[in-house]
Length: 119
Image (cartoon, rainbow, N blue to C red; front, side, top):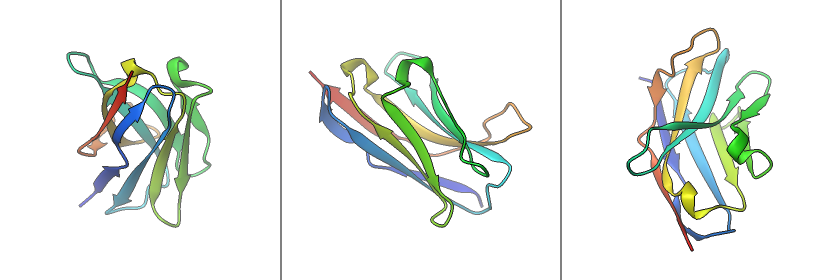
């Protein structure tokens, strides 16, 4: 059974930093993108960043470029999201997800971790 488990969320002041982790299990993710999404209250889920599991190439939403860094550790089967200069409006539940590179559907999701940025 494929499982993604996020951790590392919490409360941080605006301008601060957090590092989210996503532990993956149940399969190898070669040939997959691993991604981070977020959903703020009353808003739709939005893409934040993704990484090619095989070669480590990242891709970011414009809103987080230069502040967030996605990375992966193949040995630990884990993906990370380093978030710096956090803004109040980035308060949301952050989700880890996976999809095959040749698919457009993110078909595996974690349960989410809450990030709250205070002013």
